[in-house]
Image (cartoon, rainbow, N blue to C red; front, side, top):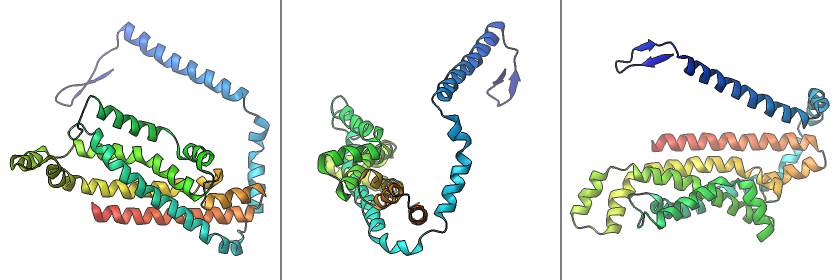
Length: 271
């Protein structure tokens, strides 16, 4: 068993009988759990369809190629809706995430006993539910459409942005804050001139990064009726229009690649 000393040298020691027994028991326990899980998966799997999957995939590929290029004239509005869902959802989430982040950070929260736990709960609650589930809930409340997609993306993004931002707030240089406080500045002046300038690069990076993620997530919200190009994809899948499906997938891929390129350029300029 290797043990690293303070001088970074590795010294090997023989395991005792109890250590060997515990190590073997851990491996056997892991193998037993894996075997049990595999049995459960195997019992609920129709293996005929698994073995037949290559033939089915080849058949779908032959039906989907070549893509139906003339159908691209009907994808302009859906892909525009997808970009709007991602952009507006990101902007709304940032407006809500900033105050939540300041309330959650231990060095800016007004109350560590009452307000901070509430802010942390908001962060965990909005991050723990997928945007598709939020979209399903919102469609039942406000009806299908782009607005439900925007709200779903916004709610899903609050926890992500607030978590990264409050961690950036907690890592600021306290010397600058103390220097501004020593001049007699108010709490809001300290925040505006001592904290905000230090977290602006992190805030910009988080915003661009989340927008890039939201582009990907908004492409599939239409599958549940929340607007965007996913709605066209769902309609094409329902009627087995495979040439249209392949074209839609190519358009989604192009949108994701472009958004990745834009976000990488913006992050590079910021950093």
